[in-house]
Figure 1 (spheres, rainbow, N blue to C red):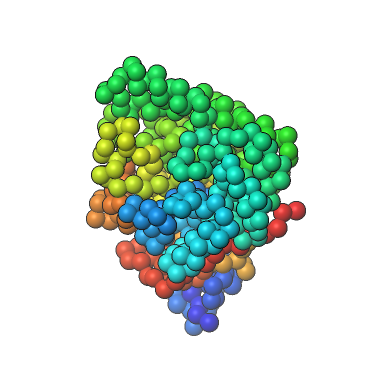
Figure 2: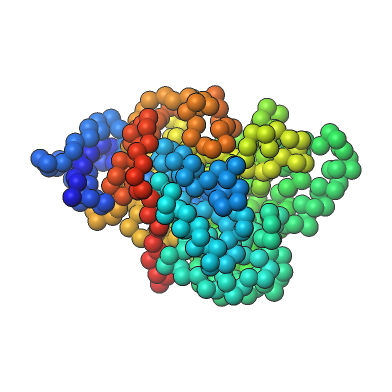
Length: 444
């Protein structure tokens, strides 16, 4: 069995940074110590580098099947690995949407052949697939996704009876996209009448407003409290919504929340420069909303940092506002973005690893990943203080663009290991089928 010895790294793990060695044997971490001797191991010097668990991104859209002109499991998992993301959970709004167990397993079969990173896929919900949702096995499916607001295809769940049944009986955690459909449609009509052909991306946060988000998020939280449901509210975009969530140890929570990189990075002022390139749902909102999200994140009312990576072609994004789709590519740069925030003294390295690695593993009960621990899979990332500019020629997204183009990060991803295999060496991807289907521990 092949052995790799990472020497003298600054190991960020479980609230501490320690200098030490990590010995990988086969797929797993064999030993962690201050100084390890392993004569037959391949030595990787890591002096001056940070070693962290691979990030677990709990919300991505890799577009396969059916939308592969935007991205696919192979291309986007490559970008993830180059960015230090070793495991991802992908959303069901593909074509066809993953609304049955059979369709869900088809996505797993694609990933088994083409994903460089570890993977799991959410079961989608509609107003009429309750029986299929109840069939999922929580030991090998990450969770259930409910669009409680506008969505593509047949995935808007707005039937109160359906919502009650799912929240009351869900066999797994429910992850929600929360925007109130009625409010969004009303706002859209008001703005179309007022601005006509002048409607543009600067109006997006007013159409997909604070009220729309709060009405839907508060409804989800109320249903979860009523039924004792495990609920994870995705991509919080307003300061007001953060009031719905409590601080405290993650292990004691049934209701949790996620912040995304774009809501921590951009504000509504950036629409003037970037327009539809930063058109996401829910919308990027005001500077005060961004600060409210940061406050909740640091107070542990928001538990997870993810990307909502959602690529579209540049041609699609360059259409007029009403026709330009929402979403954008971010998974290649999420760890680097958070290390930039560390440089700005906004967040500690320990807290970054907690929110991007440990907490997704705890919240979704991921088996043997998300920590630097003996016996765990060696999903590891080495991060080096070395500037890297985001340029078109170093993007790995199938869509070929990024809203962060031109920005220079202070840190680079030097190496990424997937289950003990070197998958990224800082410049090149090494592909030989490293990705595995994530497994999950039972609920207690």
